[in-house]
Length: 314
Image 1 (cartoon, rainbow, N blue to C red):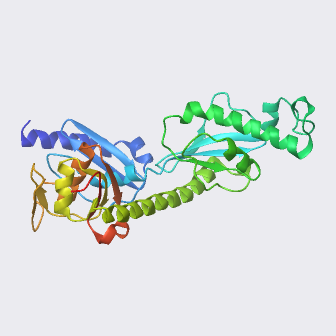
Image 2 (cartoon, rainbow, N blue to C red):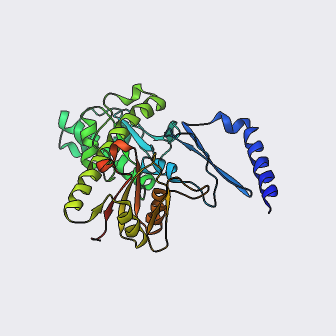
């Protein structure tokens, strides 16, 4: 397809997108459009990204890496003696109940009783201890049903529960990504949307903790000779699959190119259609099954454009 044909095909795709009223009804903080003459892909991104247009022979994906680093998705387990529901919080800001087959309706329902008062099974325990035993059994049944939904996922689970049921659930929980911080109070008084809004505050603190742990790991690895902030060193390491984790400043552009052997040639300004040095390093790290963590300048070690934790020393 010639330049004119490609341009007309893109115009047709964009015109169709612009006129799609249903598409524009559901948006997030940023819209990313990746387009070729044959196909247009759109992404609603929860992060606020600067406006920009990039034309080249490959997609400019570095800004999108922020959304994969901090996906802003979670499940909230709204748990009380009288009810339980699992709420899915999505990256676009929505929150709605996720139906879990076989989930008990309440602690009393699970115990097959009208209430939790009275003796525990076989009359062994009664009063407060009997109630606690039944609630723990209820919590264990919930954990068991959640396994079919959560197994294999790496999505944070946030508990919304008052005490003592919150602690009782934690004592039987088997999901490894249950966050330490809970949403306090009675979740029965909160809508799905309210739970979702409160969950985002917990997610922000969780992500901040992850970044702090990465910075600490970077400092330890630097003392062992397994970390770098020099772009020439990182480019060479990325080319040979040595980068385990890369922290990249998504707002900075370093003009230049990287050879197939990993040598960096810096430039005063980027050529049209050519990705910057950091963008290309990100691509090579991902190709070698490394992890790319897209952050802001304030979170970068030494204010560098990129920082690498290496699998072994250079």
